[in-house]
Length: 385
Image (cartoon, rainbow, N blue to C red; front, side, top):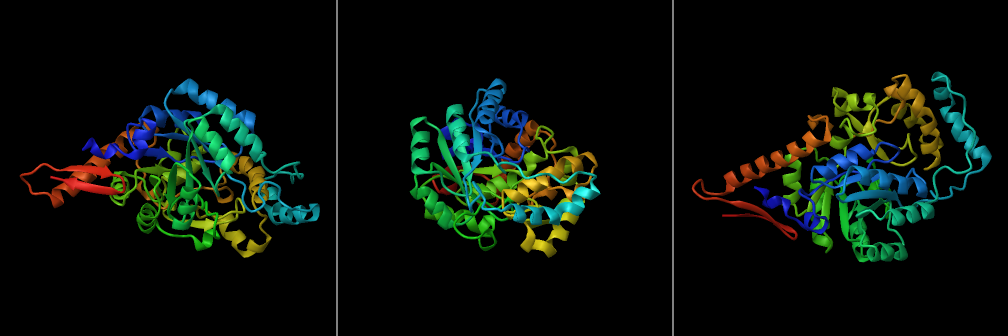
């Protein structure tokens, strides 16, 4: 049954299984999780969009102390004025006033406007190139041709995210090595960049074969995948690997808070929704009071990265006080399938479950007296007697 593990993704990066740990931004990634996934045969990832260039280099060094295997660093490409948002002081105060009741409720003083709301992208890219990870993955657009050329010269594999076939084709035309096709079931941010994310909500089962048919680059499936059945389905649709987020976020090695992880394993995880309340960009998380109350004030929500910075000032106090009603609880729609709480057991289970799922497929399509093999060939997944 191990034939399914030989794909364009595993061959390019020398992985034991075509499983990518989704990169988590906002401090949810961890060196421990990235290394654990790598050591278990997958591609561990670390979301570094909140870090400076120097911090990115330090993070890569820390990962290399834990594993010698390939890993990915993930950045957000500047999108919709996020690099330097045109915001006056009165506008900042107006956006802050919308959140003032929550600061008061948590006993926190109102923050003052920072010099910047996020690190400089060009400094981040410089740090990433200096760190030279095996993989540079990115969302919300396409890095410049010069950056892509530098990656190629340094033998850094580039992986871009798409939410539509058109975005996948744009990435492919730019020379990006692999494309993550992410369905709307995925947790966290909707990473659309050609059209508004509200108009780019294609489900994984519909999206993957469309992207596979549209581009030459290998496709990695994401969104709503949390067990081996999802992996088998993605491979059958032509994907050369899968990217799994929520199941790894729930692992003890991630930097998610304990109360966030508890929510992922609770009945509340059955109910997720898309919201701009926490970051200013559309993202999927477990429904809570903050998300629902800000629905009535969508016009007053600050753009990213301003809103992201503002709610980031609330988050430490909310976590300390156990206030899951006032913090982001990123989660995909497959959270009810979660069973494992550490990365190594999760990786082991995913591979065994995929073997089992493919064995069931073989049993349903092959005569009982014949042996069948499941193999991926480019964009085709076949059962061979």
